Image (cartoon, rainbow over all chains, first blue to last red; front, top):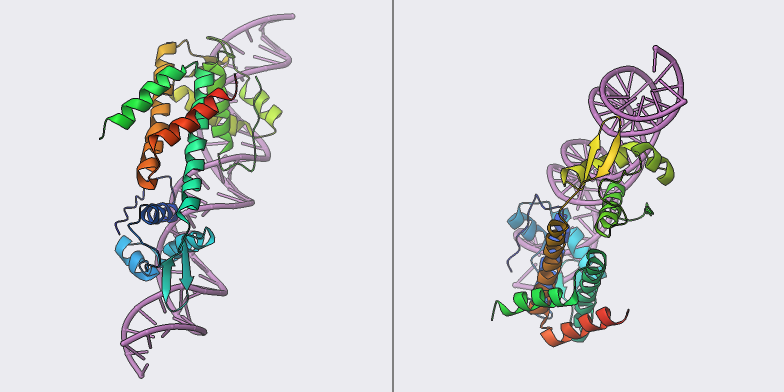
Length: 125
Length: 125
DNA sequence: TTACTGTTATATTTATAGTATAACACTTTA
DNA sequence: TAAAGTGTTATACTATAAATATAACAGTAA
């Protein structure tokens, strides 16, 4: 698994790790029941403290993306893909609502937004 | 002008003020050359330190939304509305790109997104 | 037993947000 | 010119979150 973190980002390192692992799970790069890197290994690779990795793993466990067992390691939770998809649809909905609010305040038409939308979605086929 | 701030928000107070004033300028609630509340007045109204308001005003000045003159006050910069609109379109574009990335990773179809989009944009007419 | 896993506790560093206070400087108006 | 309103600056302080360092502890598997 390829995790890239940035020190300069305003996003905390543990959040960056969380997001990278979530994405890997959702895209099936990390499969169900698969073991994640150990907190110490990942910490060494990323040149950060293992406590930072642990924080990321702890939160991923709370959100039920992974399951950690002392002495064994952390593993991807077998999860209903539909549930994850619902969560992602919710995220997209939030973004669309933000776009909606900007458009209302700035007097930007729905057509202009659709144009942008089509541009971004078509440009890579 | 009506500014509502929240202490609990993870968004810093000075950012909340910035956003509220930007929105007021963009929606023309605050018109060109109009004077903003003084740092002390706004600070009193919001029950916060005037330094927090000043920080918001300083950044708004850097972004050229307002112009501050010592001894006089802060005023809305006369600004090409097209430039502001371009900035807002850029913001929308960024959100659409985020949506695009989520959809790629999560295998969510363009049609599903369009459906959400139409739902949100149509529901308030 | 050894070498992996994760866990916990304590302390420290760093950066950011926000506050408090006081003194100072410019502008307007009576 | 004085007063009252603007903004400015400097210093110090508090609170919080993020991240680290270190060390000791505990479970698992070969």
